[in-house]
Length: 344
Image (cartoon, rainbow, N blue to C red; front, top):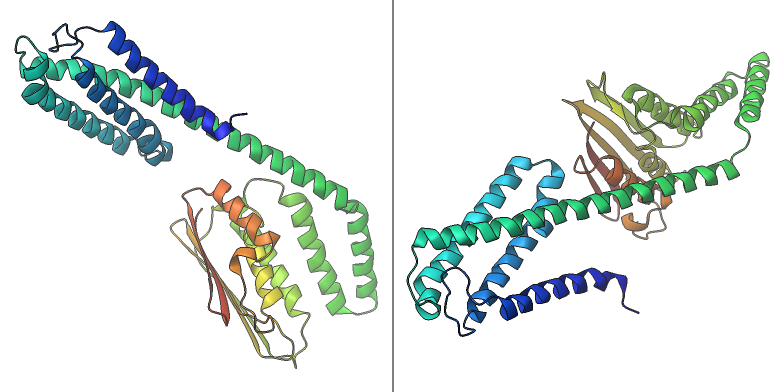
């Protein structure tokens, strides 16, 4: 059975060969090539190759490079340059070389240029239609895959989660009990945990949330982590936010896997630890930086296999912020740094 990935190329080759063979069999004269002696084979071969190059240059190269990224002006300019260049090239080849061999009478340069222009416009039109159709099919397939992944993830979550109402009731009872007994630290932990869980379970089930709400969640998470350590443990944790983010929104929980990772691999209780997390905002651009030491028994931390969280975050960024983010992860065997530039 023919592999699926070979079916489309095979169809294309078949179509081009069919057009070429039909041209050889049925076309006796073509523009200036009017000798009735089957000598049209060479001009037809060259013309077919040029038309094929035009077709795939537009459909496979220019449309994905420019049109799909909303760079319509660059796309149209590139198509025009390609059309004029190849039409002029083929006309010069016909006029100064092929017509001397395959023509009984000379034909004006502009006449040959007009004939080639019409043929090239036909193939460019077909390539644009084909290119945008293929792009639409690919995008629809990605959308369906994303919907399927989302439904699968939601189903998995529903299967594994406790009843959230019951869980919040228990947390409220524990908070009230800790308050009555004067245990302020335990009450603070329970309150922060309750706020975080409510955000994760209910409030984050949207495409975008206000940046301030995501910052509040990160702040609560970091404060809970700080509560793990006593004053005698040499752990330094710095979290800073700068710039104006008012009115901007962000995909919920998009940053937390990097922060979790910093605490997972950047803390060793008997050694001095320094974790730095910063968020900077300017003109709708966000810069997130998380830096931590690495404690893994001297083994290098593999940023490409650093857990499901970061892998899934890479996928989310690619889907939610295509061409609008730049993620760099650097490991020098001592420090681990994540830097994310994001257009909100």
